[in-house]
Amino acid sequence: MTEDAIIIGGGFAGLSAALQLARARRRITILDTGLPRNRFAAHSHGFLAQDGRPGGAILADARRQLAAYETVSFRDVPAERLEGERDAFSVITSDGGRIDARRVLLATGFEDQLPEIPGLAERWGKTVLHCPYCHGYEVGGGPVGVLARTTEAARFAAVVADWGDVTLFTNEVPEPDEKDLAVLEARNVKLRPGRVTAIADGPRGLLSVETGPGIPTLVKALFVAPEARVRSTIPNDRGLKLKETPIGNILHTDDMGQTSLPGLYAAGDIALGAANISLASANGVKTAVFLHHSLIWPAH
Image (tube, rainbow, N blue to C red; front, side, top):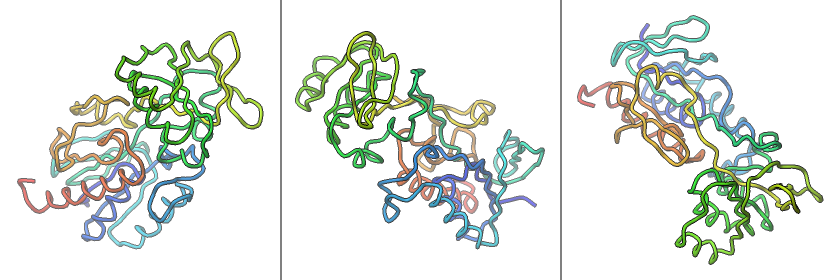
């Protein structure tokens, strides 16, 4: 039986999209690996009415609610490849299965690629963080660090300064220009030049950020914007058009969420770039509505 849509990715964007299609009584299959991008964080923040809950618990509730819809099926397997075209797609799963569908929605999210600094990855999602809006309030002010990965770090540091006393570790990234330096000075952001060589535990629960010989800098948390890579081989296999952003390449989509391959849609982080749970969910809803319209009107 041909599904109306296959949703690849059961995170916040994918499940939000699924709910819209399920309520339109459309037949959908959701493929999920159970490894959401925010799995490293113990709690999610900034999501209305769910503030402070574990992300996994929110997703589990969403799956239970979706399971009540008769037209929804779940398969906990990865999608290996996408064959066919609009109205005649086939998704081949890692267990050799084949699912046919008129439309496909990619909502796989990103895999974050952290700088290779000893001690950094072990603390990811705990005291090494990426989003001040998600975790900055819980840091509670005081000394915080921002680790530069690109020249956009200066703007990031100026924003993070609303959550603490910021030290920007330039980490051999070109230092900010005069305009950005003026903003950083106004925001009381200190610059620490040199390559960051290690992250270690410091006294009183602080992080020790080491920048070569000398006294390490102690901070309560270290913010870094990692390089984000689309967690799927399908975009490369199907030659999808990409869009370059400060955090990495995302999928190019039109105003309706459709990629450069007709009938294939994308939602969430991989279509938005820098995002959070609220934005990913909203984008999933919007994209699903346009996908639904495309099942009715050939021009969509």
